[in-house]
Each structure stands twice: as C-alpha cells, then as structure tokens.
Length: 423
Ligand SMILES: Nc1ncnc2c1ncn2[C@@H]1O[C@H](COP(=O)(O)OP(=O)(O)OP(=O)(O)O)[C@@H](O)[C@H]1O
Ligand SMILES: [Mg+2]
Image (cartoon, rainbow, N blue to C red):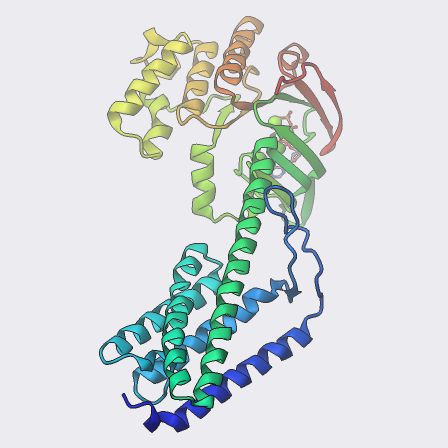
C-alpha cells in the first residue's frame, strides 16, 4: 500500500484522534465525584485504590469503553481498505492479520468491559500492544520521510494506545479488589449465619378473614447451632419452621438461608434447596407405609440423583447409626413410634443437609424414646455440624439444645442460651 496515496486519509485519521481526545476531555469535565474513595476500593493489604467514579462506574472503565470500540471501528475500516491506520504500514497480508488481531481483541475487550470479565480484559491487552508495535514501525518511517502529519498522527495513536493499556490496568485492579471484597462479604455472611429472618410476617387468608401467624419475626441462627423453639399452641412455631424450610413463602420480610435471600429463587431452585440443604422431620413421621424402611430412607437421595449403589450403602449405614439395622426390610407401620421417628430422621439426613427442621419430633413418643431421638439429633449436630431447629412443647427436650427461643402470638418474646458454641 502506498503511503502518499493515503495522505488525505491520514489527515482524517489525525482528526479523529483529536476528536476522541476532546470527547475524553468532556467526560473528565462530567466527572462528578473527583478523587473520592469508593468504600469497596481497597486491596488485600488494605491500601486504598484511588478511583474516580461516574454514575457508579470508575472513570478508567468509561474511557476504556470508548477507546476499544474506536480501535475496532477504525481497524474495520482499514481492513476494508477505506481508511488508513498504523497497521496499514505492513505489507499485505500482514496488514490484514494485524487488523484482524486488533478488531477481534478490541471487541473482546469491549464485551469484557461491559461484563466486567477480567479474563477477556487480559486478552484484550493484545489490541493496544499490536497497535503500539505498528505505531513504532510507522513512526520510524514517518520520521525519515519528515511528514509532520504522520508524526502527529503516530504520536496521537501511541498516546491513545498507552492510555488504553493504563485504563485496562486500572480497570483490572479495580475488578480484582471488587471481586475479592464481594467474595469476602459472601464468605462472611455464609460462615456466620445459616438462617436469618428479617421482619418476617405471615398472614393466612381464609376467604375474607385474615389470620396473622407471624408478626415481624427477626431471628438469626448460626452454623452448627442446635436450637429449640417453644411457645403455646397457635403461636406460629410450625409456620416459622415452614417458612425457614421454604415450604411456604412469607407475606413480607426476608428469609436468608446460607447467605441467599430465598425470595430471589425460582420454584425449581427452591425445590433443589429443600432437597439438598434442608431435612424435615415431622411429628407424624410422614413415612410411606407401602414401602420398606430402606426405601423410605433412600427416597430423597433418589430424587437428588444419587446412584442406586451409593444411596443404598448410605441408607444402610445411616440406619445402623440410628440403631435400626434389623428393621431395614420392614414396613414403617410395624415399628414403634420411636423407631419410626428415627427412620424419619435417617430420611431427613440422607442428602447431608446443612439444616434439619424438626416439628415436634418427640410429640408422639414416650419420654425415653423422645430423649433417644434427641440424642441422635445431638450426635448429628456434633459429628456432622448440622444446624438443627426443633419445635417442642417439652421443656426437658428443649433443654437438650444450645438455645431456647420463645415465641408467642407470632413474635419472638425472648431466648435462653443454655450452651455456648465453641467456634
Ligand atoms: N394453612 C393455614 N391456614 C390458615 N391459618 C393457618 C394455617 N396454618 C396455621 N394457621 C394459623 O396460624 C396460626 C399459627 O399456627 P401454627 O400452626 O404455626 O402454630 P403452632 O405454634 O405450630 O401451634 P401448635 O403448637 O398447636 O402446633 C394459628 O392461628 C393457626 O390457626
Ligand atoms: Mg405446630
């Protein structure tokens, strides 16, 4: 390609660079918060990262979002032969190859900037690097031919490419600090509480009648805690358990399970959460009487997609742990109440849930069997670190847990800490 024949394009090229610089200047003037430290901008050593932000986005990212598409547009025009850029300095086909590299990585970087994808942004560095190499080559030629316009244009391109590298570097370090701060926050929320209820209200509607079951419940339950909920009949204990277990949705308020606000989950995701994270134990056992004990226990694992060999092995091991190895092929109806409740516990824990919700698990049992069931729950809590919430009317049963929460008229009215959890 002959350089002289494209002199007029060079002029336009230089002008476009000047216009771009002007646009960036205008952007600078539009900066509202100059040099203000973003609260989340601190690197791992706690050193603040000084950023300028425009409408919630850092200034450097905005500049990058202008430069990269501009590279792509100019190189596309150059590729089509309508325009002269620094990559045109190379002989065909090298000029086409360099143009394609710049177009491809600039577009990739533009997408990465919008999506805040660090991997794509790293790749996009190839675009300014290719332009810088081409510019150096270009400047050497323009210097010897003493074409001032080429010199201005080359320096202008070099400036923009360096600005592109700098803004990429700033955007990448900003994204890194942002991501580590997000994961730190997530980790903190996750590790601190398994269950968090904020201002939870539940009103049942029966025709025109409204029955308030929960009236603004605030509750936090830590990982590995073993908690009892006590209160008079109709005070909202079962409703509370159903809401924690995502069996029912609150009328208002937030339910956060393991750091996730469950109101944001779809019905499928809720079903998955119930199957994988939560194990339910009910007063009436809710076992399938047509099926054997083994079949009852393995059912949630079957739904969860565990292989047959693995789920049978696990179910047998669990039934052994719960002292039920000789009942495996019997039907639930032929077992005692205590045995049936232990089958229900085995079924609740087969998927290794992080939380067990038990609604009066000892309600139908004599006090000896009731204590036995509680001992097994205590064992799960100690050995597997399962968070357990038990609803009970029985003070003796409640005293086997770490904390008793008292509820009345749909409100938490107090709590008793019985054992401090070693963390
Ligand atoms: N499905 C429902 N439809 C309408 N009202 C309901 C429903 N479930 C519960 N309620 C009402 O909500 C209130 C709380 O009921 P909930 O079953 O949570 O109480 P509870 O503390 O578990 O009582 P109990 O100790 O008797 O099991 C009660 O007034 C009850 O009548
Ligand atoms: Mg109840």
